[in-house]
Structure formats: structure tokens, C-alpha cells
Amino acid sequence: MSYAKLIGSGGYLPPRVVSNDELAAELAQQGIETSDAWIRERTGIQQRHLVEPGVKTSELATKAAQAALADAGITADQLDLIILATATPDFVFPSTACIVQAALGASNAAAFDVQAVCSGFVYALTTADAYIQAGRAKTVLVIGAEVFSRILDWRDRGTCVLFGDGAGAVIMQASDKPGVIGAKLHADGNYANILCTAGNVDQGQVTGDPFLRMDGQAVFKFAVTALADSAQQVCDDAGIRLQDIDWLVPHQANVRILNFLSRKLGVDNDKVIVTVAEHANTSAASVPLALDVARRDGRIKSGDLVLLQGVGGGFTWGSVLLRI
Ligand code: UT7
Image (cartoon, rainbow, N blue to C red; front, side, top):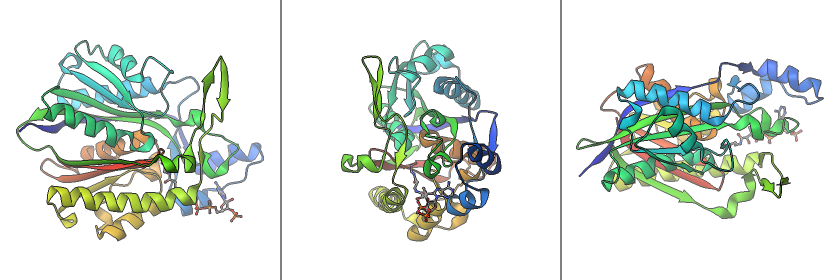
């Protein structure tokens, strides 16, 4: 039996940090009223990293991937697959994964994108695990990367204060030691309209609505239930008790969702990795960024049992249980 084992991780955040106060002051100039107090109280967010105009998802992804390669101590030519999760690709095509493949010089790697919005990284990691278990790949780079600021409507205070830009990456390699020990993905397209960016290009014109739209309360309720049920299911399937998990790394959308989740699961709050205060919601990048932060600061260690969880547009959700 071959497991997919994590051998390295990396993250990259654009250098421009925008505090709630700075954002509120910028929005006030457009006549949009918000405040640091509202954002902190309702979401736990204190700041976000935003790209300079023109910076693309592939640039953030490449930097996160280089950090993960360095951490793993391998070179790009050792990769045989790159899976990149994003809802904000550089182009309609080529895939952002192919752009990263060229930038890294990963000449032996196939490359494709996965689109599952905020669950994208968990979807991509599960796919990497399947490739490795099937013997079709040995060393896989999995990236979550977003320039979400591109699709925000800065006149909509209900959404524009919630998101940030960034990228996180992991290297997974075939091993006889665990590894990913459980994974389960879900989708329900009937909930597409509570969180979507329902626009595209057609005949050279933007069609539909190119901005992110969200029914915040509906998403909040869906997220808590989906994450709790998914955690329980993946643990049951793997024969693991929730109390035996060392670290929970859920999608970072709102600290209130994370508090509800830990309460519902009976998992101590201090076992939950929380980066939403500093990063805001970076969609597909949020889980690998949080994982990388906690590995680098020494909280997540070799041998720990970690539950990674995504939930987002589609609707999509899922969990990956991973022995580090
Ligand atoms: O990654 C995908 C997953 N996304 C999520 O998980 C997001 C889930 N949803 C949420 O996190 C929360 O629903 C929000 C943070 C989006 C909103 O929090 P809420 O407690 O559900 O607030 P609300 O939408 O019920 O709005 C409460 C009030 C409203 O005013 P009225 O109608 O009570 O007068 C809003 O207009 O807060 C107002 N409001 C704001 N006020 C100041 C909404 N946005 C803002 C804002 N600043 N930025």
C-alpha cells in the first residue's frame, strides 16, 4: 500500500497588508460605511494581504511552490504532477497550473487546475492522494492560490471586507508510511446561488455578473453543518475518534464559524489553527496557508494527526485526514 505523505509545505502572501481601519477609510471615500469594530466582531478578521494591480494568481502560486520545494528538499524536475486549485485563474486557458509548471521548470510534470472555490485545496489534495495510491504519480505538488481581490465588488461591504489574496502549497510523495489516511469530498450544485461569481466572457464581452455574490447567513449555516458532518464522517470511515485529532485546519472564512465548529465537534479551541485574523478568507489558499503557518511555527509536528477541511462555492465541501 502506498500512502501520499506530506514532505514539504510553503506559503506566500503579497507584501501589501491592508488593515480594517485602512480598508474602512478607503471605502469611506466611495461612500461605503464599515468599521474595524464591525469586521472584527462579525468575522475575527483584522487585516488582509492584497496584490498590487496586475499581479496574477500564478505568481503567488509559483512563490508558494518554491517555498514548498525548498522545504521538501527536492527540485522541480522531480515533480510528476502539479494540481492547482483556484477560482481566480490567470486566464480562461492555459490553466494556471501550466503557467506555474513552466515558471518552476517542472519539465517532467503534468499539470491541471481544480475548480472547487474554497474547497479547492481539499479537492486537489484528495486527487493527488488518488494518483499516488494508484501508482500513477510519485511526487505531486498541490497548490491553492487566489487573487480574490480581482472578483470583489468594492461597493458591496457585505463581501469586500472578507477576502484576501495568497497562495499555499504542499508536496505529497508516495511512501509506505501514512500519509493521507482518509478523505471524502461532497458537492451540491443546488446551492450554487448562495455563493457565486456568475459571469464569464463571451464574444469579447463580459456576460453575467463578474463579481462575487454571497448570501452570508445562508453560507454561514451551510458551512457549520457541512464541516461538522464531514469531520465526523471522515473520522468514522478511518476508525479515528475526533478526540484523537491533534490539529483541525478548517477553511478560514470567519472565526465565528471556527468557534461553532470546534464546539459542535467537541474539539478544544486550542487545537484549531486560526489564520483568518491575519489573512482574511483566501479561498483555496486558506487551508494550505494555515497548515504551513502551523508547521513552520512548530505547532504541527511529524507524527501529528491533522484534519484539513474545505467548504465553499458550488456548493462543495470535504475533509482530508492526514498523518504528518
Ligand atoms: O469562503 C466561503 C465561505 N464564506 C463564508 O463562510 C462567509 C459566511 N458568512 C459570514 O461570515 C457572515 O454571514 C458575514 C460576516 C458575511 C455577515 O455577518 P452577519 O452577522 O451574518 O451579518 P449580516 O449579513 O446579518 O448583516 C448584519 C448587518 C446588516 O445591517 P442591518 O440590515 O442589520 O442594518 C448589514 O447591512 O451588518 C451590516 N453589514 C455591515 N456593516 C458594517 C454588512 N456588512 C457590513 C460591513 N460593515 N462590512
